[in-house]
Length: 408
Ligand SMILES: [Ca+2]
Image 1: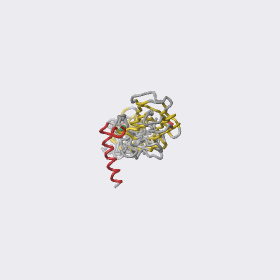
Image 2: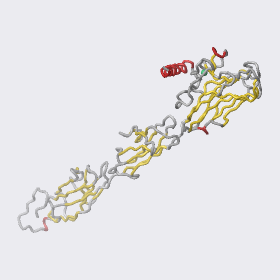
Image 3: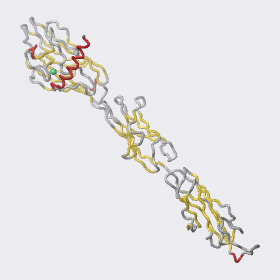
Image 4: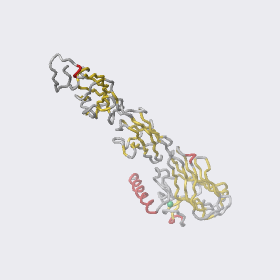
């Protein structure tokens, strides 16, 4: 039954925070201060609160107030607040009251404690209100200020750890005769942690790839606050397929994009870290040039290279590279060989037959223009000597044959 009551209480709390507009947060970036507005206080003999611990009450005062119980309205939000006001029938010296809670502060950029403080009644100049983290005083004031004000304290020195947050009211002396002491009222206690700045570096392996390489992109995120989240890899403004949200490995602090489809040429790549509740987003850029592979153009011919003008002569090319496609230009010196200036490769080969070689010596080559993956290349030379028919004594009647090679 007690468990059920607790559940009902928590459900009620969530509603209360929202309904009363508490200016403390229970979810930024995680629950750091439980019951930050003291709304979980329970009315009864010496009002209690399951989330806050008060010092031994040896004179019967309460520290959790609502208007109904304490007869005043010192809440900053909601209907409950923390109130230090010793009740005494006898004079006491050096009397101290405390209310505390264990808080776990994440490792963000900066940690800040915020609370609202009112000193509606000041009855002894020596009364002091102090806030401690563990044993360190992080804030202290006398009783000279009335009216709620927000107090902000940098407690970055205590981030990344579990500490005791303690409010302390110290009374030099407490007069006899009821609630005639200084009042320190506190409400809406909050601890917020800023996001840690991060950096993201992007590298490629290999660093100088060709289109034939399997490229690996690695983003490395700095880990000031145990970064989690994802990394998106982009080529220019285009998200790389399969790498839109690669989970960050929290051990190596890296995210890897394997085998991105990168065409030959210059690329500006980006790795964008998503950030998380404690870490700010960041991105890294890499200029990566992907080279085409080298191609080799091998020129050959099955024909005799000395023959009489007017006969067909066939050149063959074998093109090696990364599945080369495109055209080969067969050349006679610097000029394209007539009808053979743009012969499409088929399965890496091309051939062309010409019967237009004039009388004399010809230096024949083949030039491959390259394609999206292959560099251009030029073959070696085949030297052909074409004879003048008038200078040739035919053993048989000469008859030009429309074939691939000379007959004589
Ligand atoms: Ca409150």
